[in-house]
Image (cartoon, rainbow, N blue to C red; front, top):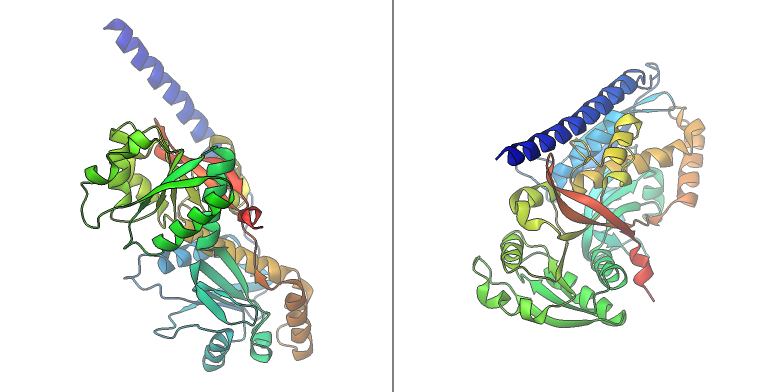
Length: 401
C-alpha cells in the first residue's frame, strides 16, 4: 500500500516538473511576444485587399470554414506589406463553379477585383489552365489579376496535396520505413475518394515490390465488423491500410486493437485530426497517420514555435487541423510572393509598374507548389492524452518512375 502511494507521488512530482517547465516556457514566450510589436502601416497608403472566395457560412463546418480560420490566423501574424495594410475580403461565390481559370477571371471582372485572390478547389490545373478531375483539396492563389485577365493561365499557384500523393506517400512509408511486404486494405466504398486512395496505394505497393493480400469491404452503417475482420489477425499482414471513413474507420480500429492485432495500422485522408483523436481515444494508440501537417511545417514563427519544437506541444488553436494549416500556408505563400516585388508594391496604382509586378510574379511562380507529406504516430500522454508524434517526412514524388 505504501509503495503504491509512493509511486503515485513520484508520478505527480514528475508531472509537476513538466508543468513547471511548460509554464516557464510559455511565460518566456509571452515576454518575447510582448517585445515584438506588430508592423506599422502608413495610413496614407491605400490598403492591399486580398480576396478570399469560399463558402464560410455557419453551416459549413469543413473544409472551407477551417481553411478560412487558418487564413485569418495567418493574417493576424502578417498584415502589413511594404507599409501597406493588408485587408481580407471574404465573399461566398455561391453556386458558381470554377471549372477553369477563365471562370475565375470572369468573376474578378464582375466583382471589379484588382488585388490577389485565394480560392478553394478540389481540382488541379491542367497544362492549359483548365481543371482536371477532382484530386485532393487545394487552395489556389492568384497573385496577379491582370495576368489572369490577359492570359487565363500561368498565373495560379496551388497549395495542397492530391489523393494520389497521399496514397503514394503511404505506400512508400509502408515499404521503405515499416518494411511491410504485404498489406490488407479496409475499405468503406461509400466514403469520399476511398476507392481512388485504395487503388493508387495498391498499384504503388506492387510497383515497390510488395503485395496486397486482400481488400476487405466494411459494411456501411454497421459497427459490428467481426465477420469482416475476424481472419485479419491470422493473416498478419505487414500493414493494414485504411482510407478514412467518418462512419467505419474508428469502430474498425477499435475492434482490431481489441483483437490484439500485431499488424501496423496506417490511415490516410483524415480531414479533422483533433476530432479523430478525440473520438478514437486510447484505441488509436500506435496507429500511423499520413497528414499534410505536423507542427514544424507551419511558419507561425516567434517563441511559441520554439516551445512547440522543444516540448512537442501540438500547434496552437487555428493550426491543429490540416485544412486550417492549408489556409495559413497559402496566405503565407501569397505574402512571400508579394514581398519579392516589395519595392513595386509600395506604389498604389501606377499602371506601368503594375505590369512589372505581374511579370515578375508570373516569371518566377506558376503551377503547383511541391509539398512533402508527414507521417505521425498516435501516442498516449499523461498530460496531453492521445496526440500525434512526428515520425518522418515523405516526398511523394519519390514514388514516380
